[in-house]
Amino acid sequence: MRRQAPEHPRDRLPPDCRVAQGGLRCAFVPIVQARTGACHGFEMSLRGMETVGFSTHRALSDAAFRRGVLAEFEAAVATDAIAAFRALAPAPRARLFIPVDARCFGSEVLLGVLADGVAAGVPLTVALPEQDVPALEASGDSAFARCAKANVGVALWNLGSGGVGLRALCDLHFDCVRIDDALIQGIDRNMRKRTAVNHIVGCAHTLGTMAIAGGVGSEVEFYVSRDVGCDFVQGPLVAPPGEDGPLAQESPVVVRLNREDRRRPSEALQRLSAVIERLPPLPVASPKAALLDYFSDERNPAVVPVVDDDRRPLGLIRERDLKRFVYSRFGSELLRNKAFGRTLRDLVVACPVCDINTPLEQVIEAFTTSGAADGVIIVECGEYAGYLGSNAIVRLVHERTLIAATDQNPLTRMPGNAAITRHIEMVLEGGTSPYLLVYFDFDNFKPFNDTFGFRQGDRALLMFAERLKAWAGGNGGFAGHIGGDDFFLAVGGVDERSARAQLGDLVEGFRSDAESLYDPASRAAGFITATDRYGSERTFPLLTVSGVAVLLAGTPPDGGVEAITRVIATHKAKAKASAEKLCFVHP
Image (tube, rainbow, N blue to C red):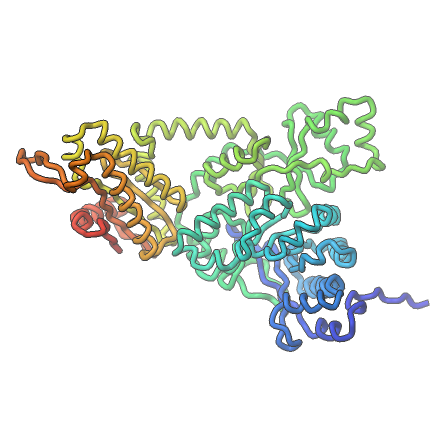
């Protein structure tokens, strides 16, 4: 008797929806590892919408939802996407990301299709848009648990488009997050975007989640996205969508950009590579008895990292959580017994995850922010690379404290000359992203100091230092104290218009602060009478600060730090004479 073919989810749709769905085709948009160019996976994208009378996948989903067949429609799309993906011979272990309307997330018909795809050897992740966060929160954790049990990943898609994704990222367990195109486009010229993306990436890594930069369209957008910590990149620059023939296994553009990057390995990469423990991870599919074998070896630490089939970290299993099994009379037998229901995934606890190139400050922040973390899992190109335990992190903190103490201004506690020089060298070696270097110098500081004393002078320096540190911290920049009344600021991803406005606010804010240090009569007059450097008595305006802002873009000037110093010295007088107390230079 001939075996009947399995029912396709499309067969459950009403005829009109079935025809519409059948007229579409699948394209696959590469998602690429930022530091190697290897294809991590592909996002399925529906094409041919114009032939069926809809403008977007979402519009088509809305129509299916109104007909009460949303789950069946999405299951049919997923079935065809998996079949088309397999036919295009993707790279080994390449992951397929399937956009899914969260209003049917966790439905039996859809989850069955996804589970069958995983069983057929296709690593799958459902991509849930940020706009559907309310539906996700209403569904609770059960759908996430069922996806985890079926080895189906869950991603939060287009974070930054709806304004509610960060809350969901903290409350729900996502395997990765895709940052919306609008936040990535122009990130090299917009300090606010860079700060927002840096915050999102830091939050994601603290929660053990990988980050994808979407919509990368230029080389500088790629470099900035990679350098703020995005693990993967996607967009028109990276690689075109694939519809016919074998799918790409790497992005030649990203391979080239990484090869041409002239910057030396980051301090974080050099230091983390030296201190992380290369603990062999435990695959999540391992038998539970493997835990007994691991923790029975006294040479092993009290934790073991757990990874999935793609070596993506899932978290840690801690020896102390197994005490009731390891040290009880029948506990070992329970763990070895296949009938005992718990899997390794049930025993995994969350752990912060950071890329091996993450700045040390962010690694330490991820550890301290997470509260009860035992350490930090380190990944490279999205895959497990090693483990940084709490003792190693304490050593790093101690080293940082010692280094900072030897190169720190004793009054303002800001980085001094050596750190400033190192930062400028790093910026010049990069030569890829627009960067702003600013030298600040007080105007009329000596007569103020001579008239009101050193204590008031120190108060003025501290006032400006606090404003400068707050500005740098809010814009992802670096602030230093050269010495005396000279300060330094560096920030990437800027354009002159926004920099001029924000630095103008900084200068005006300090002018207002400084007025409070004068007596009422001097404030009312708007000047003081003091002796100049030649011994003559004359009037001096109230205290202000001026700045020379050097805007770097493209190829840096020849001569290194000395060339930047000469540019600043040449334009100091112009900055002091200008009404806005700023001079912008394009070397």
